[in-house]
Length: 312
Image (cartoon, rainbow, N blue to C red):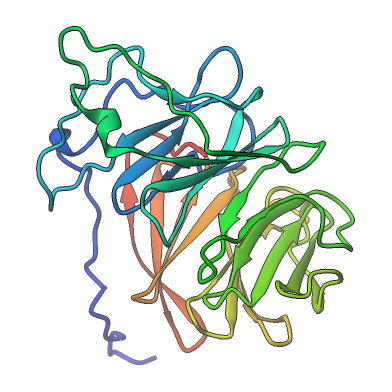
């Protein structure tokens, strides 16, 4: 056995909670049972699936940053704040346009997709005396599906193209669990409750160009592209309910490596960083794991631990 430790400039990476002034309190996160990313962000704003009465809603807030000026929004949010409310059932997902920091799309249980444009003036005089909250209105409503829509996703290079989990890409034997574009937007990968992984030509639509058997369990599976490489990472469950992390060759959908993480029950959400770091956050977990990718291997670096469980 080698006595040398694999060199890595990320070996001592660690996470810590932001300071009080760089966050928000009194956040009323949605209690929907749908496995989703409850929060999304652009360079200027964040959106949070909100627990609101009278239909579905999400909050839009300026993104707090330790590198920018202090937020004018109070750290402890008022009990009533402006919300994006036009959905008639819970909002399940939001996604900010990569081409415009003020544009966000939402999808919900009502089968609708909506587009919203944020005016910076909406946050003037927040919480001041005489201030009255005014809800956001969508600039576009789309009746996308008769069934709930669990994910919405902007195209990475075409400014006005949007994808949602409506079953217009044929061949899925059950509900679509996740969708992801590659960096050019030419290809789209999906996971489904039928346990298969599919790749589609986003320009052609129709049948999948490649299909393979994915994780053996039917619980939530997620997929993402590992930057501009010919590689896809997925998370899912084995037939014995072990949580798994896999790497696939995109051009053939050949499984390169599958690693068993643990036997917890929460769905794992993967996030890719362009410095070759893969982050794993599991629903209900009290930690976030990070791995460094090199030569088709994922090397565990460390993990951020918290006394509060992750939501999603």
